[in-house]
Image (cartoon, rainbow, N blue to C red; front, side):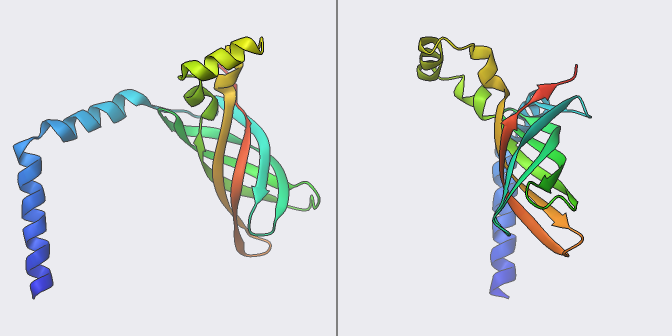
Length: 152
């Protein structure tokens, strides 16, 4: 009984806080709407994938489906570099590391000193992935990195 009463008090308190300043949820919703984009096969990221479950190196490609600021949700296909007998469908969470790092003046200065094009940095991505290996009936997961290409 005490749990139900405590839960009720917390819910009423949260509703009172949200009602007192309803501009915060509205600002969050506006930020999500203005900073997110939906993509359908207009880009691709060939990359290196590492599987933590089997300690295996893999190669494959992903495509960005949904992007919010420097993060995106991806779908792709991978296969083992050593054992090429099956392809595994995966989903991934990706951070656009290059475009995030390009915001800092120190990184831009280093790129300029190395006489590299600063625009290339925006295409570097890194992330985590998970997929179901239907042949072995197990879940595989790991990290990946690569360079994004756009097909616009």
